[in-house]
Length: 257
Image (cartoon, rainbow, N blue to C red; front, side, top):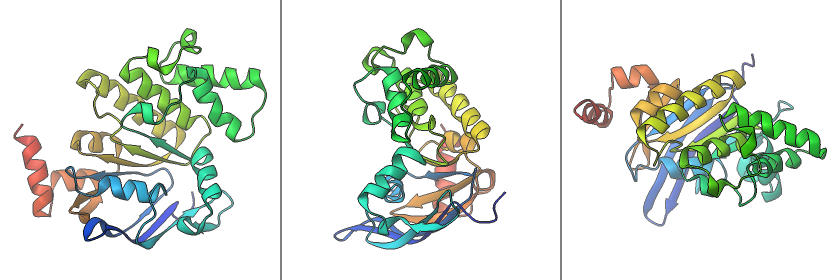
């Protein structure tokens, strides 16, 4: 077990003119740790996620990632090609809308493309690995040649998860991964995600407005309001004994539903 974090974030800020996207966010993320970022719409959580995943460049601050060789690299000083390669190999990004994370090719090809990005070229091995991963996300092998448009919403989200995890990434970003799904489908997907994260030892940053999702998936939580972190700590502590008035309001609103 390393004594160094996987990701170091310091004073990260993003401004859109006079509007605050996120402001002065700092934290360390450790290998195998799941961090939930919660808050209402407009709180800045998605802006933060997009900055961390380098989809947006921040206005100020730093984020350093520990590469597989052990050295830390400042993400915003990497070339665009280096960042794209990191996203295809060592990172994953699970979108709320699976259409944003899938291509209009077969289920097997969606998974296989990630393998080819890390150098796999043997068709038989790629297809066998795709079959294995479809099984792991509860998609039947006989659907391997079907396109995502033939799948239900829950199946498309599970396919997106398989596409992201097949290369063995160390860090996965998730943007409302159960948003827009029926409650029963959400529960099944959350059970699947929790099992995969634990089995694979993944680190993850999960953006969600759903405190139940945060409790089920994460060990640690940050609560955001108006672009700023108003409270952070172990997930159970934050939810069971919230200190910040805004967090207390969030938790009480759920309890009253």
